[in-house]
Amino acid sequence: QVQLVESGGGLVQPGGSLSFSCLASGSIFSIYAMGWYRQAPGKQRELVATITSGGSTNYADSVKGRFTISRDNAKNTVYLQMNSLKPDDTAVYYCNAALTTAWGSELNYWGQGTQVTVSS
Image (cartoon, rainbow, N blue to C red):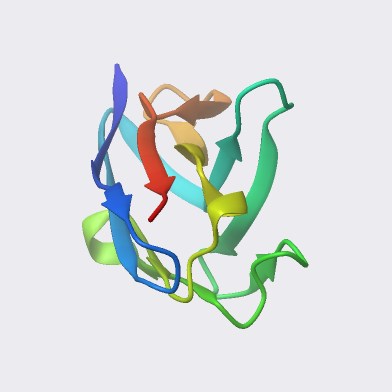
């Protein structure tokens, strides 16, 4: 069994900052990539940022220069620092991990999602 547990998020005014963390635990052999996705009401889930075990990052154009993804491989934890937040950033944010389980399966896992609301 593998679990991704997110923490952070909440309500913030435009221009403010928030941060997330996501811990992957359970029967994990290795994690290739971790990342964050988001889904706004009435829209499809979209990529926010990803990071590989080697530290290579990928960002959505809409968040480049404002969001920073980082990772602690020893702790199986990924972080997202969000600055200069805009109302368009309002969404449910989901953690994702592409990993190999202890029994050898290569699978994608998702966190439970955490709400971010950017509003004055």
